[in-house]
Length: 633
Ligand code: COA
Ligand code: AMP
Image 1 (tube, rainbow, N blue to C red):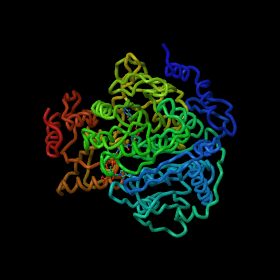
Image 2: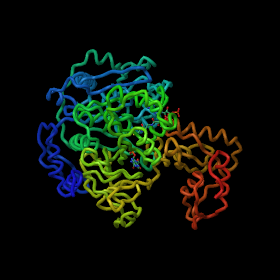
Image 3: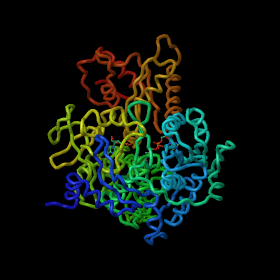
Image 4: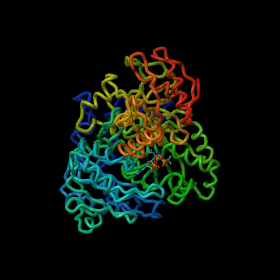
């Protein structure tokens, strides 16, 4: 028997032109596309070529034209500043049009890049939508990154303007953003023409005459700007994500495919209709924030919630229930780590009893593997379906999901269910041969990727091919390993590269090693992700010092921790490292990171046959024991 999911999936793979072409009819186009899928330049595929549209128009103006301008578009809820503010589609459109005017007055035109380095305030979403309105390309940089990371992105994106705020608020800490911004501009080879700074009452940023402009002052005299039609294939944004080196990858998202896929996903994946309230508790600095705080809910005419707070500590583990109940949230999307934090602080979900959450229908989790404990806890205490789904910055939306608007499949713990329509998922071996159901291999996606997925990396087609398309010809490499069972359920087990997942944040251990290697006393180092009850994984560093270094090891460790904080940022959560005499290696010199990780996680391990000197493992175990990790095998 077929259901809506089976029908959609089959057509999306066998006749993508008809499938996506039909869906695209529900969007607003200034000029209809000439072709749905252009495959004339393989392995580069483009969607909706010849089409012209505007992302901001589809998010805001279209709803006003359709008569729902008074509906609430965005609710800013900030327990850290005790502020709540609602914007109707009219109000949000007016603010966005004015800010587009501000950007235009600073010389921003179609195709120009704008970096947005902001905390979770409504102005961040306004800035993103204003760029889209002008056809400018935004690149949002997460606030938890250090100046150096921001500088790298400045050099790559070459923005004309940077939009920032005086500070972010992390529970009770006020984090001044402007000194980080000034430092990044100082470090970068490419300087912006202007910066527009939103001054928050908690911290006054000092301004540089002629370069820095005050958000409020600029808005007071701005001329609203209309939507600028762009090609469907023009870039909407660049979002940098950790790669296997210190250089982040600039994931490009185009306008047309993104609009079509995301709007459709709101109903198909999340079962959300126009007028429903949707909440993605993430950060606009991550892909989840781009797709599901800002764009998709607005495309669908839903109310979106922009939450400036944490699952715990703002003020307590009841804040999610408060927001669900107060704003009538129908679906929440967050990372499992947020629920692990709530479960840790309020194991019996006592705080939920203070709120009526009968409006709440589904909890969606993604960003890291959903551990069965957290799944069962959420199912038992909330009493609604808890849906795991799997995706990546590159894909922009779910690769595998229990598509709640199509068909609700039985949940299997540990699996994000089945491939979402458009995603032709396979599990293969090193020779790109399919493995049997249930066997672990590399998870790859047969090309073409559906609309909304990255068409390339920013001005770097070569790296796009090298990183994603070369290893498995004809397929996109997800860099996740896992298996598909007999019923088509996908299981995502682990990364195949050096990426680790810390509290749902994607980080490269290679990038951390690059920082540690720069410490003058460090001869060699290794960083790996080890299991952590709250954050899923946390980084752990091993340092081998130069011969003759007699300084206190604790001091050196402290310095390296500070270096990672300064170079990558506090979000890396690099807080633990230990000094060892040597690192275990194979005879060909490869560091045995997997074995060290197993020791740190107190798991059974086999001494690898290729190990150069197995006595080192004892030294590693002792060193880990001294910092509270590991035990002898
Ligand atoms: N600006 C500046 N600093 C930031 C920041 C921001 N936007 N976001 C995080 N940081 C800092 C934090 O203050 C913290 O610094 P510290 O080492 O000085 O304490 C560090 O970066 C790590 O932050 P975080 O990962 O948030 O850890 P935490 O221990 O403060 O909180 C959780 C743990 C689980 C509550 C938190 O990670 C969380 O809410 N996660 C939700 C999941 C999520 O949003 N995932 C995104 C993808 S869906
Ligand atoms: P990011 O690009 O930050 O969204 O991180 C993407 C990576 O997070 C994926 O490649 C996976 O390794 C991991 N991930 C995301 N969602 C899931 C999930 N539902 N289950 C398992 N891993 C996930």
